[in-house]
Image (cartoon, rainbow, N blue to C red; front, side, top):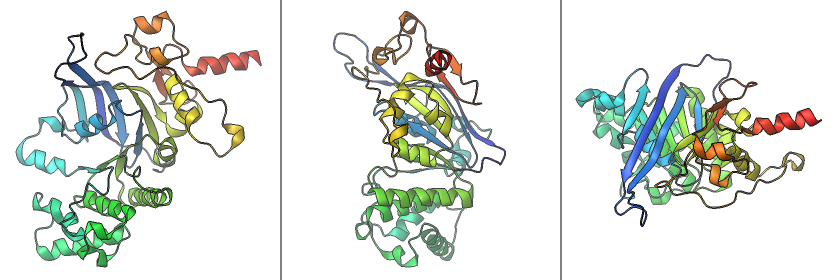
Length: 343
C-alpha cells in the first residue's frame, strides 16, 4: 500500500466509459443482441497507489482491464493517462505509450510459453521495444537484475516454466511486466490460482516492488480479504457499473451500497465478535443484455422501493469519509443512523 502521508498525484482518470458487444442471436424472443459490459465507468488512480476492483464474475472487471490495456476500444467516454488520451495516439507515440501499462495474468501456467526459458520470457518485450536495451549484454544484465528483484536469482534464467512452482511462475510474469519499466500494472486475479502461503509471498512481493519503484496497480480480484490487504482504494462493480468506491477501510467498515454490505458480510473473519449477520442475496444476477431499469441491483436488494425501479440512483456520499460514495437511493448509512437514533 502507498504512504498515506505523501500527496497524491493523479495518474489515471476514467470518465463515463461505455463498452458494448454485439452478441449473435441475443436473448431469445427479446430481439436484443447488445451486451453493455461497461456502462458509464468512473475511476481514479493515483501514482504509487493500488486500486482494488471487486465484483462477481461477469460484472465487467476483465473488460475494464482489457480496455485500460487498449485491447478493447470504448464506445464512448474518456481515458486520461498522465494527461494523455491513449486512444488518440498513433505510430511511435502509441508504441512508446504501450510500455507504460502492463499486465500480470491470472494463470501462471497458461501465461508463460513452455518452450521459452525464463530469461527469454522476460526479454521478449524488448523485441518490440528495441530502444530500451539495445545491446545483448545490456539485455542479459537487465534480465538478471529483474530475476533478482523478484527473488528468483540468476540461476533461474536458463530454466523453463515447467521447472518452476506456481508461485515462481507468477514471479516470472511479474518480472516480465516490469521489463518495460511501466507506470501501471494491471493485476487480473494474480493470486487466485495459487496456494494460500504462496499468495502471501506474491502479494508481499507486489507491495515491496511498489515501495521501491512507485508503481501503481489496478488489482482485480473476487477475494475481499486479498483486496483489503493490498488496496488503498476499492471500487465495487455490479453489472457494468461502479456501485461504490472509496478508501479501503471505509468501504469494508462502513459500506454504503447494499451489494457491498452483502459482499463484506460474506467475507471470512477471524474475530467472531466482528462477524455480524450474514446477508444472503436472493435470486440470480440479471443478464447484462437485459439489465433491470433504474438501479441494477434492485432485483436482489432487500431495501428496494418503487423509486429504485424508476430512476438510476444518484451518488450518495459518506459525510464522514472524503472520497467515499455509492450509487444508491437507500444507502446503508440510513440504517446505521436509524439504529443510532433508536439507541
